[in-house]
Image (cartoon, rainbow, N blue to C red; front, side):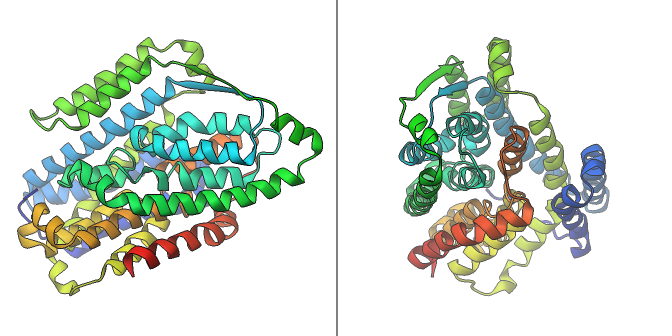
Amino acid sequence: MNQELVAPNPWMILPFGLLLATIALAPLLAAEWWAKHYPKVAYALGAITLAYYLFGLHAHARVLLVAHEYVSFIALIGALFVVSGGIHIAVKGEATPMVNVVFLLIGAVIANALGTTGASMLLIRPWIRMNKYRVTGHHIAFFIFIISNVGGCLTPIGDPPLFLGYLKGVPFWWVAHHCWPMWAVGVGALLAMFFVVDSLNYHRAPKAVRDKETAREQWRFDGLPNLFFLAVILVAVFIKNPPFLREALMVAAAAGSYFTTRQPIHEANDFNFHPIREVAILFAGIFATMMPALDWLQTNAGTMGSPTPAFFYWGSGILSSVLDNAPTYLSFLSALMGAAHDGDMHHLISTQTASLLAVSIGAVFFGANTYIGNGPNFMVKSIADHQQVHTPGFLGFIFKYSLPCMLPMLLLVWWLFFR
């Protein structure tokens, strides 16, 4: 996708940094204040950048392009969130470690159709119920690793960074064609580790619990007519013209799902619009404030020399661990496009395939390392806490699960594909 380059003042990157730092730290240091005032923070910092672009740089076309990308992004995320909220999975019985592995593998596949947000919201409650007699922190951590993050790297629908890449011109099937080996290694390694950890947990459980787990499980699926609305969303993804038809179809599918789903199903899923409202508000600020960072990276990419794919893998990954992975992905994609001929995506794909792949995998995989790396992570923790499941805190998640479990898998992926 070609566009006219804008050269902003580097100081205008400051609102972007402030917003991301606030998103990362405010929920930990001032949770009540943040819950009440986060819209004001996002809108205020976004307004500063918009005013600079509109009245300082007169870059109206740039602002309109970003606004279109934001609408497309929220339309997809919101539609998948609403449709997944209309499907309820009821589970009776208890799961053995092998049943849990199969469930997580299925969830990793589903994440590519429902998105990591939709799959997480659909599956986290049945996941807790099917392990209710011995559910603990590792069940939540590996759910976040596999279903909320790593599993969704096969399609642009799967994870927000990849959809933003699709909007920038990365072909839809390029992701599946190039990412499946990393997906297989990443998901396979995490499932193997989970099986060992869960087997130890299973054998420590009282005999009465193990006897319950050998009982045959019963599954019931409600709200399956929503699969039609899911199909509408998936078809809409491929529509690019006329403008906003894609987004209109997604919104229509979400509305159709919401108004035709029976109230008991929404109640069983504890469905409400708060999570998607928070995502929409925060990303309005992120999309606005990140314009100077993306444009500066693209216009100065030539000064970076020739970084290796390993640089892009670890660079995008480490930042995706401590920031949200969607703007991190866009920042590195802009740097790559700046180094390509005239910022042309086709030229980038043909000459920088390994680096683009490294950015994609780094952003998606490393987003699992902290609760703030990807949107679904905090949603899953919130639901688990609400159901009184023991989950680790912010630092506990990193030191008890991410470093001993995620890091070996990330090193393996680097060794096999990007070193």
